[in-house]
Image 1 (cartoon, rainbow, N blue to C red):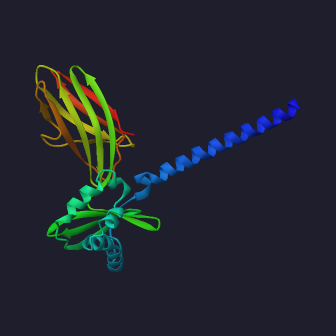
Image 2: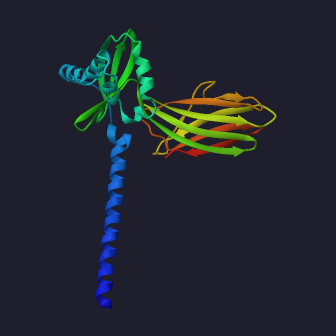
Image 3: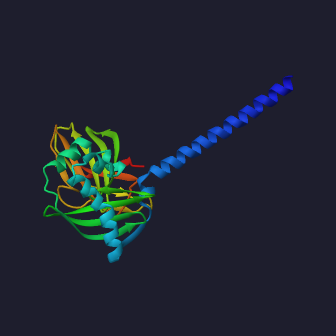
Amino acid sequence: MIEKRKKILTTLAIILLVLIFILISLQKFADEESDIRAKIGQDVGSSTLSINEFVLLSERTIGVFFKYLRENRIEEAYSLLSPEYREVVTFENFQDSFSNMELTYEVKNISRRTENMYVASVELSGENCEMLIIMNGDRFYVVPEPFIKYIPINNSISKDGVKYTLIGYQINVDSCIIDMTITNNKKQDISILGSNIKKPSGYTIQAEGEGNATFAVPAGETKDVEIFFKTSLDFPVEFEIDREDNEKIRMYKFRLD
């Protein structure tokens, strides 16, 4: 009887371990499938579509999107936005953006940037803009700007009387924008000398320009900053910001992955 119970318990333990393994694998698969990098696929460079491909793609994606807006089917138009875009743009904000707009548009060009993503140049009510088309299985998403993903971080480093809070960062098709707050608790102004982001390969991209790469934070003040980097479908893994401290340079790093 004891041996039989041991065998039953051993069998149950094995089944439990197998179930745990399956659940972990399924969760990993789900995370990978929902990751925006998996959705858009590999970078294939920029290639122009044929006339037939251009007409077909524009009419069945962007054309449908604006058709819904013109017919005041706002909820249906909103459902066509990428899940990542809907994370940062509420339905109310989306509705307000298009409620008073004269919706005349013309798709000027569409180029393929990744396996599943296209960049469309659109003239919207007299203004030129870029829109994204993301193909995902048997459905598509439209993004009314070159936005890919916003990743919240909310991590802080406090050193030598200065607090750096990395709120998050936004990945666009050709840029990455770091969103942070710097609180200067010192009695003198501080100078930011520059910053960079690091790609998974280890290659770094420097911020450029006065007021973007270099700027000052007055004594006793808090400054909200957006640091712009020129990129190309890059998903950085590290952010570094550098501050001048007399004859020293103090460097502060944040992990982004």
